Length: 64
Image: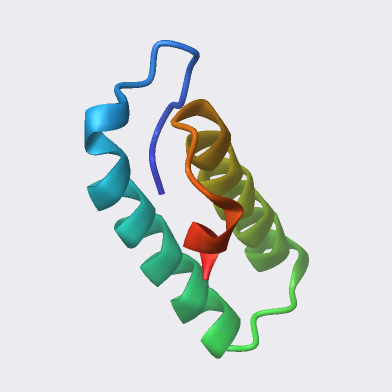
């Protein structure tokens, strides 16, 4: 998970960051983590992915 995403995010890092975030998200989902703490992490990862997709004008299909 990225520490801090802000409006000045450098989109040149988007490819690597998206790959990392998607891997972390898949790992958590694969564990079937349903406790509140894990769900909060999943939500944060999803938000970070969506932020990068929107900020850097990626096609939403990039999420898969």
